[in-house]
Amino acid sequence: MLRKDAKFQALVGRHEASGAWLVLPQNFMNASGRPVQMLAGFFKIAPGDILVAHDELDFPPGVVRMKQGGGVAGHNGLKDVSARLGSHDYWRLRIGIGHPGDRNAVTEYVLHKPAQEERAEMDAAIGRALEVLPLVLAGDLQGAMLKLHSAPEPAPRPAKAEPPPASRTAAAPDKPKKAPKPAEAETPAQAGKPVKAGGLGAFLKKLLPDSDPARKK
Image (tube, rainbow, N blue to C red; front, side):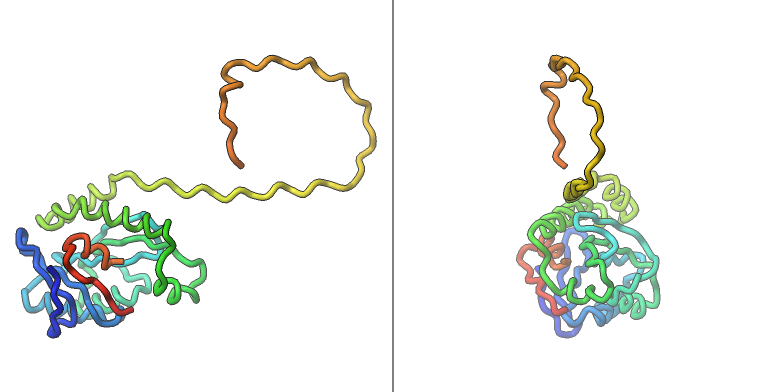
């Protein structure tokens, strides 16, 4: 169970079977590295043994990936974690939330609740991440990454149908009409052929259901 710890400014809990610590910062996103740094320093946890779960604008809803190290791609939470730890070598669990399409709209986008369909896709991605959690808790993060990345990807959303092109109004010169060909009987295959139509708090809450992962943004 996650409990509020004023010293760490976070909800903190421990997975008894593995001894892993779970931390959900309760301060602002751009200061979320402080509780990670404090807990890691107190318990002597190396960056390579830390997994940070975060939202990922570069992935559409339903996609989830793991990696170790790398840049922060403008993510203020990761930027603070890296600065506080003095390292980029921690692991990241990247949960896709999609991009609004305009960088100036990102702040409003991440502060609003997702649409119902997108929320369902994010929950499914979190579910796939939880399936590899036993490997993470056993210290096999490489194995967890391989298993997660080999899981089936969600089907892409169908593209919206384009409106039919406007009919031409210019009159074409009359052409001699050809005699119509006699109709051919449909084969059984033709007759039966179908016609084509033109948070991360949830991650910890699923792990420890009794916790309250509400967080300031």
